Length: 148
Image (cartoon, rainbow, N blue to C red; front, side, top):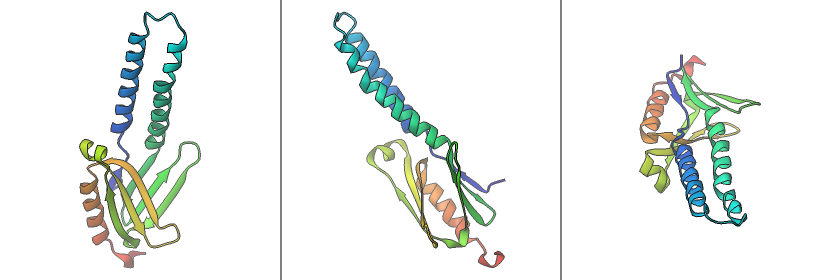
């Protein structure tokens, strides 16, 4: 059982779905009396928004970061999987980045700097990123490098 499990939030993806559907509804309402097929081209914009959101949604559902014992495990991928397992004592830095929109929604990106070849892990759009960073740093502080 993981001590800490972190997954990306679907909040911004859901917001994109809603905006795209509202936009499509507006286009349909404005073009309901139009006899031209040109209005149909306008549906490409919300269609593209929905496809982009669906891609991000799938990617986020298959990304997980968890602390199990004295290891940090990062797994991503739907069909092909990439898994990294890092001893907690190798974590050197935890950074939280938030855009304006992420701050409004209580989300942020968490970057973890580790000692090693591929030294940075980033998990995007997580809820309460500062609290998660503090939890992770507490786990790192209490990890015992002599257990390796």
